[in-house]
Structures are given as structure tokens and as C-alpha cells.
Length: 220
Image (tube, rainbow, N blue to C red):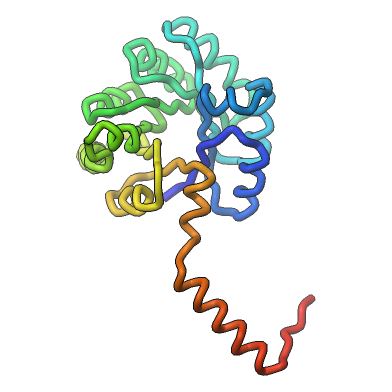
């Protein structure tokens, strides 16, 4: 499973990328707005930090304008992935850009039917929003299971399932159990994956026992 970080905060990305566990980054207009900075400059910085896919979303809603913005954004760096909404114009733009060799992340997916369309359009990634489905009383992970199962029936589909709108570590575990290709995590949730009280307790006991020996391990 690949881990993407869902943020436009360059400092957060630098910190998490240093772990070697980050495979890519997703941004969106809301995350970009929080930085208060020029969007293109932010994306360029992120692309220099993380060699994997970095999603940059268009804000146009009409096909021709989406193409213009997508083609401009992909010039920022080779690892830019153009993020498009799951609308008729968005899928049309996805097909065009994908045919041109551009990575595309189709976002705001809420049904398996939509995911099938994105795969047909040649999307590199489909982003189902599990947390937002949970918010309205549906089980977002059921959608992940459906998409993974459907895609597995068709080897010609190369679209990766990118689980988005993740709210807690259980979403990550369930995504892995279901066979999703990617999860995109807020920095807070990624850090929560480390935590377990028995890990902390066990480490404290090991260190206490070692201290009693009076030994040291040499360091280079």
C-alpha cells in the first residue's frame, strides 16, 4: 500500500517525507487556500521534496478550461498529477490528458458507477471519499470494497484506488484489508499509526533494564 500525505503544508511534508514512508502528496483548493501562498510555488516545492505523484487540482469546471489549467500545472514538474472532479467535463478532460501521457487523479468519487467511468477515462487514480460517506450514515469502506472487486475483474483497468477523506487509523487498516492501492492521510492520522500503549510500555521496560547493566553501545 502506498501512503500519500493529504496536505499543502510544506513543513509538514518535509517532516513526514524524512521518514521514508511517504510515496506521494495530494492537495486540493481548500488545502492550498490554508497556506496563504501562491499555489504554483507550493506545488513546485512539494514536487522537489517528494519524488512520487503530487496531485494539483484544477479549479475550472468546463472542459476546455480544465485542459488549459491541467496542461499548465503539469509543466511544474514531471511528478505532477492533475486532479479533476468526477463530472462529465472532468472525465472528458481526464481522457484527453491521460491520452497525452499525463497522470490524472479523479476526485470526489462517491459511487462504484462513478469509479467505473473514471477507469474507462484512463485515470491514474480514483479518489473515493470514505469519511464524507460515513458522515451521511453510509459505510465508506463498503465503496472501497466494491471498487477494488470491480477493477480486479478487468485487467485492462490500470486505475489505482486511492482512499481519500480518511479520518482515523481504522480507515487505513480497512483499506489495506480490502486491497486498496493508496491511502492519502492527513498528517495527524499518519502520526497516529505509530501509537500503541504497549509499544511505549515495552520500550520503557527495555530501557530501564538496559540502564541497570551500566553498559553503553558505541556510536560511530
